[in-house]
Length: 111
Picture 1: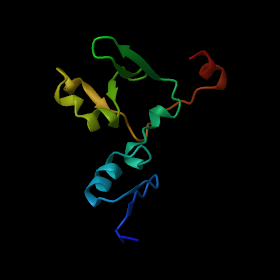
Picture 2: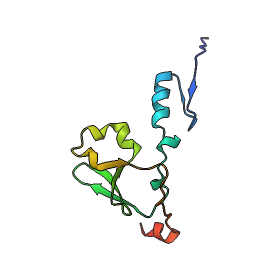
Picture 3: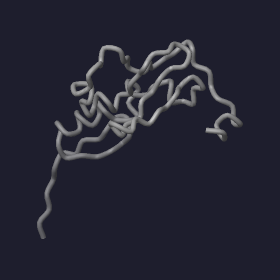
């Protein structure tokens, strides 16, 4: 019988296990449960407008309160901002927002 002892790395945010330190470092940077990637807008903000772009087949986000077009950490992860024509008019979704207003249950059912 053959047994191996290896070093195992665990994500500090979600608990995922990996055998490679480099892969785990990359995963921790872009983990959905990382506090640097938890946008306040996704916590059911009523001012967040989601639009499906049929040309790029991606979802575009807009704040109805400020009128700013925004992107999430997933766009940074996939490096799409390098291929977009006008990345300067988009801003990253904030981690904390003073304009945050949570939707009611009735509003959630309508969406």
